[in-house]
Length: 183
Ligand code: PRP
Ligand code: MN
Ligand code: MG
Image (cartoon, rainbow, N blue to C red; front, side, top):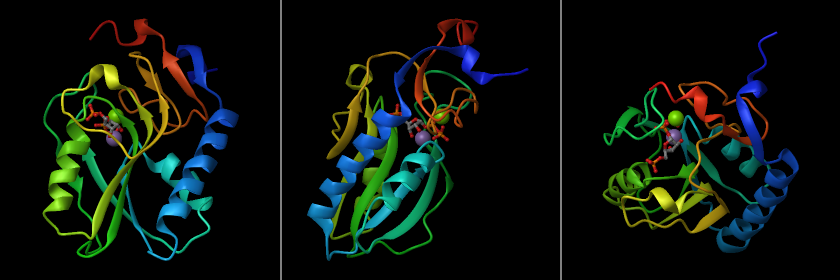
């Protein structure tokens, strides 16, 4: 049988730990945005599971949109060039925007998103990321809502991939280094 869990060295964050933290972040967002109809923008593809869990635990009125950008391709390190593969459908001018990401790593993706979004004149912008890996930062950027700080190891699952694989793992795990050592 082909079981993707065999490529995982160890579980970093279990399903239960993630669910508990997502509920806390959603409580923070509820407190900060109740009555403001925030526009949550999910950065595809990595954030799709986090976005789905987060918005299902938000009791307030909110609007959702999706944008797809990619910079890692099939490699374990950023290529440095961020490419838009799907743009927003909604107008964000005057809206309270929350950008939802799975991981803030080098910061290139979120700096790019921030620049792009600011130019569209929203009322406010905040960043919400499930994972933060400050050790790899190349751009001085910080998120307003952070789920967990993670060590400098290659993590997959709960939306995060390596070469488009492992997104469907229900937990976040550290990938065995031998999986990408031949790059
Ligand atoms: C990954 C991840 C974040 C970004 C973080 O996306 O989902 O969006 O990289 O890295 P950075 O801070 O170094 O920019 P990726 O480009 O792999 O696309 P994907 O979401 O489709 O997997
Ligand atoms: Mn991504
Ligand atoms: Mg990726």
